[in-house]
Amino acid sequence: MKLHIASALLVALLTSPSAWAGFITFESAGSSPLAIEATRDAFRAAVGGGTIAGPNGSFGGVRREINWDGVPDALADPNGLPANFFNVNSPRGVVFSTPGTGFMVSANAGQPSPTLFGFGNDFQAFSAQRLFTAVNSNITDVTFFEAGTMNAATTNAFAAIFVDVEVAALTKIEFFDASNTLIFSRDVLVAGNQGLSFVGGMANAGERISRVRLTSGLNTIVANGVLGNANDDVVVMDDFIYGEPLQSVQVPEPSSMALLAIGLAGCLAGWRRRR
Ligand SMILES: [Ca+2]
Ligand SMILES: [Ca+2]
Ligand SMILES: [Ca+2]
Image: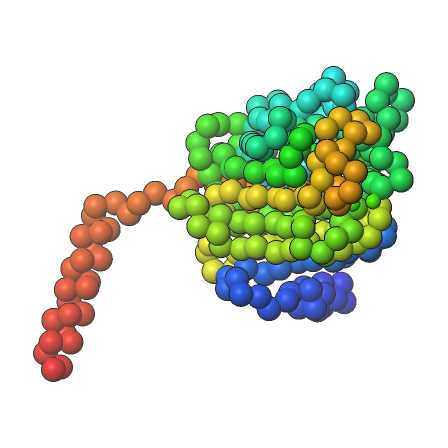
């Protein structure tokens, strides 16, 4: 019970007023996993709870997680991760795209490639031990499908953990609806060198997210140990947490449209009589 009150209080504290009506923001940053765990737990609870994933990162069919750690060595650094890995190999209802050349998850210790994309003095893992990045771009777009199918879907909530955010206003998360309108945007909190930043948004007025754009710093990862340039802030990602992707809501049946029209006509007639 105490825990519930504490969580509710935490959600209240972490919820910052913003111009984006209809979304609750969850965010925190710090030097270690402990610094963001409470926010991660509050977001998990808000999106349906659960701490132990069932098959394909599913928590009771309510929400999903991706921590990258189960990706096989053959699809990790120095090799690319297929954009549809998490809708085909391990169907979790998300497909990635980028203006860059692909995606990569970092190598585990003992593999030929150095861990943490070769930047052990800059990155750390939140969930041990793989991280995720787009290659040759700071942009990752996430689109949603009914898991394991090609049926377009939407979600009500999405959160990501960013690693090594050192400069304000370069790293951000954006949500777009089915008509490609921006419905939520949040700059990710600065955590400093090797730090971890959590940011998430959850709809509380029925909004549906069709695409999430993650902008990770201004620099790019070209290959293990190789940056796109020497100066700009490089940022990579760890865990994604999101509401179960559901097929887009169907347009109302003709019969219910007719009922709606009859109802409206009735209201209008009443209004006319009152006049
Ligand atoms: Ca750094
Ligand atoms: Ca991980
Ligand atoms: Ca950085």
